[in-house]
Length: 161
Image 1: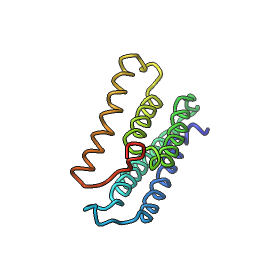
Image 2: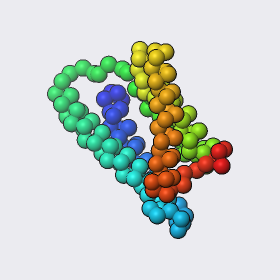
Image 3: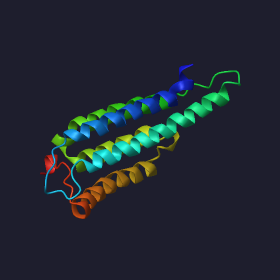
Image 4: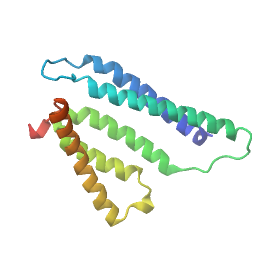
């Protein structure tokens, strides 16, 4: 029975987490050096995450309504549960380590592990691991330079600073 409510529970969790992230963004110190302000990015992420969580909640409620008339239970998917719990652990670790390690190195590790976590086991071939590694390196570096040069927002430097 719990597998039927998995998406709903996940949506509610991420909605609550996005609200928490948005509320805690008010504790970030404002500086005059940033034209947009250091609160912009966490709030943008929180709003995007909250929107996606609401979409997930609505979709799961519609799916539950459709399944209410059908008999039988959905097959168990342990992969989804592991991916969900792993994502939660990775997000908490990322949040705790971002200031110490820095945006670029921690984001590379996080993104690579997140891709491995959500990829179905049958798709983890040697070629995919290399492509995932390249993506995990290029995306954080590109984001760092985009925020630094285009927006003037300083992300945590950590070990590189």
